[in-house]
Image 1 (cartoon, rainbow, N blue to C red):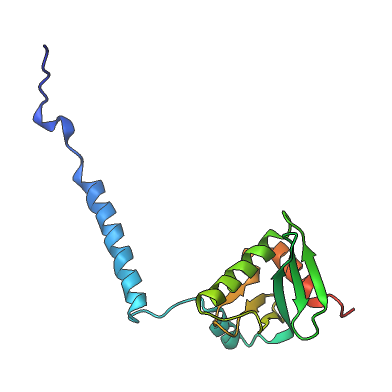
Image 2: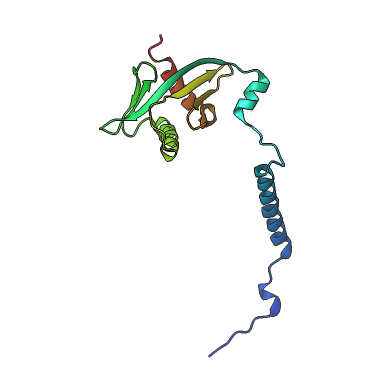
Length: 160
């Protein structure tokens, strides 16, 4: 049987990269805790940015989402019940995702679907989907121009 012996320095790891990685982790944790505990201000809060820049809402509509028996997602006007859009299975992926996320947040809190969501368009081209019941918002422009176009169609449907 052959037994190999290793020299002491054969398995050494350079300490400088390990120290650098540890420093990055510690700084990240410290900054996260600083924001969580209020030592640093949160940045990029859309409502605050809009207020400071004087951005105004130019159009809004209340909408409701519903799943149909065939798996489609139905978007209706929150005030009139008029059908605004219907997304069959395998289509309208972002509308499905945002609707399900907002509805799930309500279900977790025991809130029903009675109160519609607010779809708001601003004069700088941004759009927001807001749930007044949970306080959650979805900034639609942050997901690309195509998403804005889909929700602009919903906003304008039946108003031409």
